[in-house]
Image 1 (cartoon, rainbow, N blue to C red):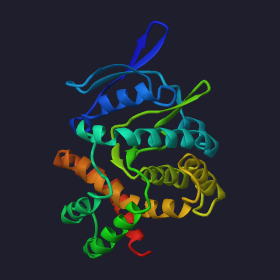
Image 2 (image 1 turned 120 degrees about the horizontal axis):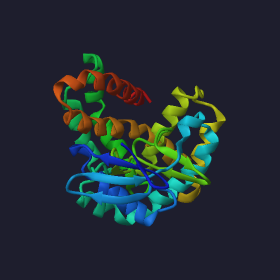
Image 3 (image 1 turned 30 degrees about the vertical axis):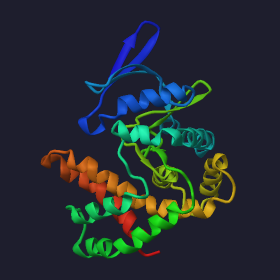
Image 4 (image 1 turned 60 degrees about the horizontal axis):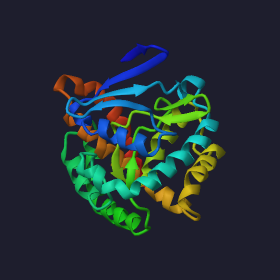
Length: 268
């Protein structure tokens, strides 16, 4: 909700119960990363309310230029790297736990739930369960610490104001493998900007994001993105469970797209 004030504009947000962790998480992130997170003016954790400063214009309003992500992604990676020290604290305050050790359990809940898929696709997901567990263990062994994972990092949640870029709307976040974040970013560049999968921008953005993490992580990144589609679907089941039955058909149209992108990963 837009709230005009003397000298500018603020924004009021009342978070849904399923996102009750968002006010505290956003305030914590802003306290440590004030140059790259939406400005938090006030928080009421009990009511799940936030009052936020104006962050400017969404990069989507500027056409979602890949150049904006060249600046945003390294900043975001630095935040994630710094937040590894606070991962357990975030989980203790309600941020969903999608760490590698618990993802196989989440996968079992996913394939046991009601899914907007054909029976053969559900069977494919169920049959993939042992392979998924093995892939999670392999990724965990590669040594990247889990951290805050925004899980909705697209053109509508990165804002440009003056010379600063700020990330907003942390309500879909989890504690997970940090590299999972870029599957949403890349999906929007494919669907909105119509970049083909082998467009050189994807390599440039991947490398810009990975630079703060260190060298030689391209293979780790590719493995993480494949697993990330399943983690993304698991996170969506939490959102779906919080909806009233009449809201689920609309939700399932988008959920089905996510699930089908996950199914593609079972063939690789």
